[in-house]
Length: 143
Image (cartoon, rainbow, N blue to C red):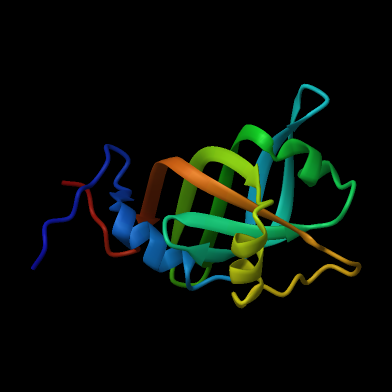
């Protein structure tokens, strides 16, 4: 059995590989960015593209404005309230608006259809510098 890295509070620390595998299991995450010098959070649907997260947004959106090489956080999670289990993954890095025509064409081929109404022609890529994840299992006991 593999060794499990537990934090002092009993939560399991996840490897980057585990974090990315979990991110691919959920359709919605949250991007944290700065708006008028204050933190803002927006739910978004996304796709994992290698080590990056890709999302789409509309022209003139607050998110598009925030994606000008700004440092952002991206979080996704899942939980089972009956089983008292769950996980959370946080990526921290720079958000970049994708402008290269060839790269935009490649991204258009990804399975990323916006859930929100309206035209969403802008692609934003978050390239993480920090990847962190934690999981709680109801069977975890104090060490």
